[in-house]
Image 1 (cartoon, rainbow, N blue to C red):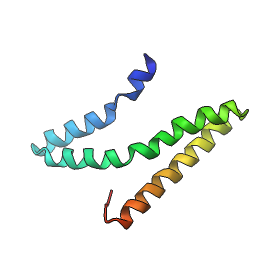
Image 2: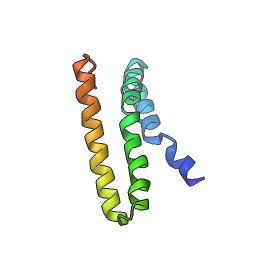
Image 3: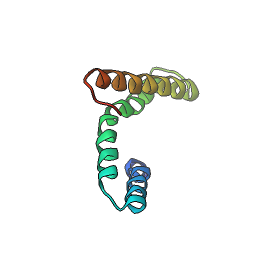
Image 4: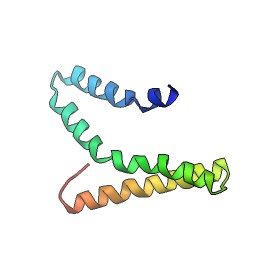
Length: 89
């Protein structure tokens, strides 16, 4: 149940709602939502790498730090590649 609650994109829902309330225009929320879609894949890096590192015998904190570093690299890589295709995030 905890994983389900953590998976709900509450911050994104609040941000899109706030954008709409501030501007009374849904286009900003739509653009925000479209940009988030591109960033889902790199965020999965953390949830894949962390348990693998733990199972390989790394401690909790080293696994977390390495997973976070890998996720940051994945974000920058996706942003760089999308930029080459003219997609700005």
